[in-house]
Amino acid sequence: MKSFDVVVIGGGPGGYIAAIRAAQLGLTTACIDEAKSADGKPALGGTCTNVGCIPSKALLQSSENYEQVGHHFAEHGIKVKGLDLDLATMLKRKDKVVKASNDGVLYLFKKNKVEFFNGRGSFGKSPSEVVVNGETLQARNVIIATGSNPRPLPGADFDEKLILSNTGALAIPDVPKRLGVIGAGVIGLEMGSVWRRLGSQVTILEALPTFLGAADESVAKEAAKVFARQGLKIETGVKIAKVEKKKTVTVQYTAEDNSSKTLECDRLVVSIGRLPNTDGLNAAGVGLKVDDRGFVAVDGDCRTNLPGVWAIGDVVRGPMLAHKAEEEGVAVAERIVGQRPHIDFNTVPWVIYTTPEIAWVGKTEQQLKAEGVEYRAGSVPFAANARARALGDTTGLVKFLAKTGTDEILGVHIIGPFAGELIAEAVVAMEFRGSAEDIGMICHAHPSLSEAMKDAALAVDKRALNI
Ligand code: FAD
Ligand code: NAI
Image (cartoon, rainbow, N blue to C red; front, side, top):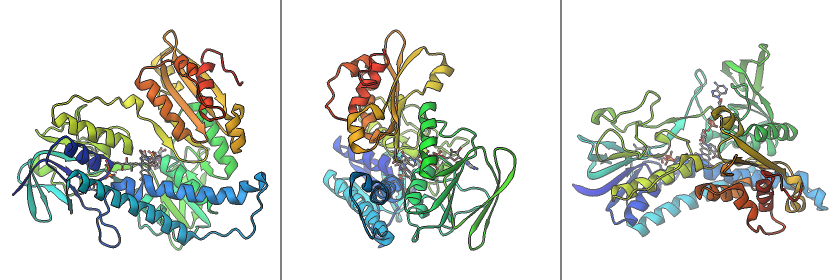
């Protein structure tokens, strides 16, 4: 029987990063992942690489290029005739980007001497035995990194033709004339944006009365305005009554004003959250504790109730984000060798890759109010930033929230160009427990979007230089 210090089940961003870090630390490590690509080869990288972060960002980029050429190049004095969409090539390019990432993980496994098994892993007779492809591996430690699956809407099962999860939404072979989306969360907004840019009339139906409730109110308000201007129709406060599938899909729902409404669409994306995945793990067989929502129960250090068994990423509590899964993977590998890493969930950034991008870290203004924390806010619009004007993209704002008295940064909220890149500065500052003044005192290149970070930080003390 093969024996390892660490066996990781799942090769997504949580699992493959955990395996690499464990191997770097000198532990004999195996990683098991069942995903295969269309050609039957391993498709390492999990949801993120195959049907999540990577393909969605590839399509967001391609569709944004199309929108720019079609609608914004003229402002720059560039006239384009005969603009044509070749969706098949766009989708192929996305597949190539995915494949390069799949292969990248395989390469990293070879480089770091992680033994890879392409098959389904499940616990054997005890928590220290993992069975894959009929072979039993002995494991001193097991890391469960089995990720999540899309949550289906009752009465509207995914068929990936008319009713699509993220998998189908990333591979629609022709631009639907009318695309319905249920759930105005991260997937709904990103995939809705992709297909709107490519020509679909997109309607998003959201159950909650508030739009983007997790974001800072001022950012959510700005986002709602901009998305509406772009033609993304978003209805909040709806209650879905029935979904019927014929040649098209008909969604009957109650609108916020209590009226009964019908949405007919050519395809329907259901993006109403994700469920932890413990399918086929034999979790019950070895007594692994799972909570009432199906997440593997873990403590703050990702330890499960079974000695030597850890769990990370989407299959445990916390935000379902690739970088959160990665941080947990690294931390668990380090804990196994006796190190004492720490993850601060408060400094895990969120990025929504729409146009404009939306990014934040730390607390929102509404959270600070609810917690009774005294704070000062400073914000500047991108319209006051020279680089944004040169780019031709002045939508949005940067907002800093800092503690009254100490000036410690408690949250930073951005909506605008490259928000997903700009937020990194705020994460660094918060990790170092920096103050808004610290950012305000740092020299930022001119002209750069990052100057909006400096100015918003200065605005906390009413010292912004460009508004
Ligand atoms: P996963 O990535 O889900 O990987 C789990 C792996 O385990 C899979 O490969 C699965 O096949 C395998 N597996 C499961 N059970 C077994 C078993 N028993 N045996 C063997 N293998 C098994 N997050 C971001 O941070 N940024 C983004 O931009 C972003 N975009 C997203 C876009 C979409 C459309 C979606 C759906 C998600 C997106 N996410 C994004 C979320 C991100 O994909 C997840 O948070 C991340 O993939 C979780 O990583 P994980 O390692 O926990 O699980
Ligand atoms: P989500 O949790 O972001 O959004 C789901 C939305 O659906 C919510 O607004 C919810 O109120 C709504 N909803 C739930 N039930 C509903 C119903 N019956 N009718 C109408 N609306 C309903 O989940 P989503 O978009 O499915 O994405 C899953 C996760 O994947 C995200 O939470 C995020 O963690 C991750 N992700 C991250 C991305 C990023 O970091 N850029 C991109 C895409 C996904």
